[in-house]
Length: 182
Image (tube, rainbow, N blue to C red; front, side, top):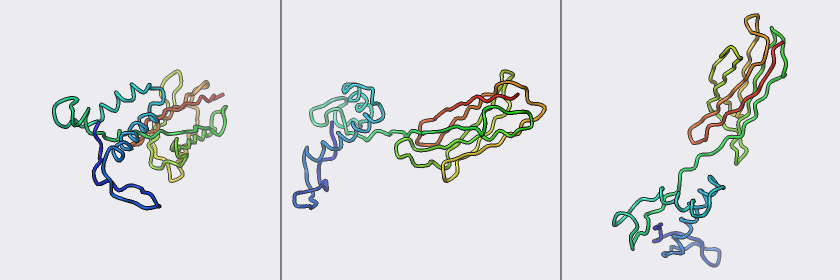
């Protein structure tokens, strides 16, 4: 692999910084790219991670692996973040006329910080089909609250609440919960 190795500002002896060249400067770039891949794919073997690294390089020089550039110029892989969600309702059993309050908290799975402006699609279904289908966005605290008032048109039985959380730069997360209407 090839990585930046000329005029790299790096830490230096004596609590200083210095401009340096060489493989000691290039190695951290490759190591960092592999560390990102390992975080995203912890189950993969070393060989499989290296194979993934090949796919993110820019081929330089002669086509394919060559003497000067190896397999190409390493690029940090684009790794999507993950959500951590908690889907809750104010009860698990309701009577007709009750209001079902659905709350979902959305956090960044790594930092545990709230994710604002994430799209949350809410689908409520029974064995007879879809009752409600709506989309909302999380607030600055990473939360959505949705209220559904049941009425005489609602059938008695089980209702499945499914949420799909999405946002650019994140893996989509699906959660579900069952409630009962008596």
